[in-house]
Image (cartoon, rainbow, N blue to C red; front, side, top):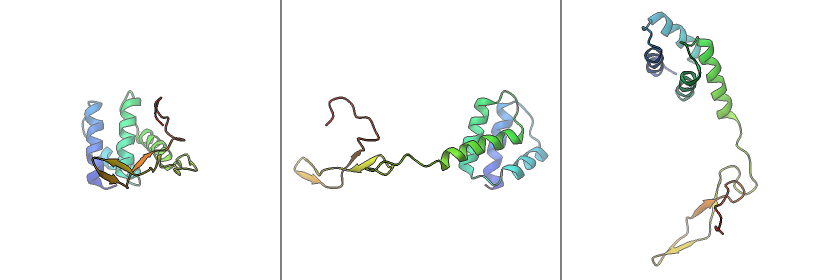
Length: 118
């Protein structure tokens, strides 16, 4: 993550908790969090705002970022049909006189089908 990625998140924290910006605090938080990707920080800040009542310590944000990372790195459940993708190739479809061969459907083992769907 770069400084330009971090600054909007810091400003979001400051605005949400009605605090004044501090360059020193912003830099200190950045030093601790710069190893995370911008997406992880975005999700961690969102989670922090939802769960923390007061302006969070950098350790709180880092903890939320670690949980976000753990969730992102967890392997998807692997199905022997779709291999965790939830989509499988389907039979060709004919509509309006055209045969479509590049057709997919949801994996029936992974995604519950509505009643009446064959």
